[in-house]
Length: 136
Image 1 (spheres, helix red, strand yellow):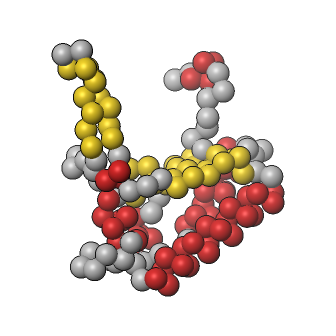
Image 2: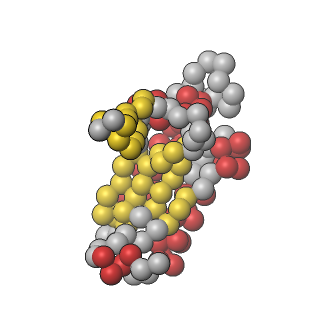
Image 3: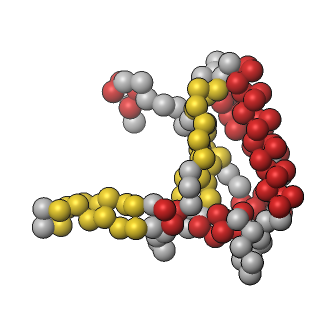
């Protein structure tokens, strides 16, 4: 699984909200969209793409926490204590962990404003198919 991250501020900037630091232009957003479309198409054509999804902004999140007085605590996002949250993911089926890392490395080519590029990261993590895969 390849995971990407963003903050509520990143989502606000991508939306081009006036006054947001680092607001994306329509051209920035279109370039990112074109890159992602091409990236996903390449993975589909290679047969390596299983699934991909982008997630909505953290403001649309609900966190379900531990029980208090027998009732789960539900908190609406975004969360001040969390700078970045999961923004999207790709599940790929490929020959090796190294190949999945090569795929994720291509995300560094995604066009974006310079301050976004400087902070962008992607995590690559194997999926557990069974309890035996959860070895620590």
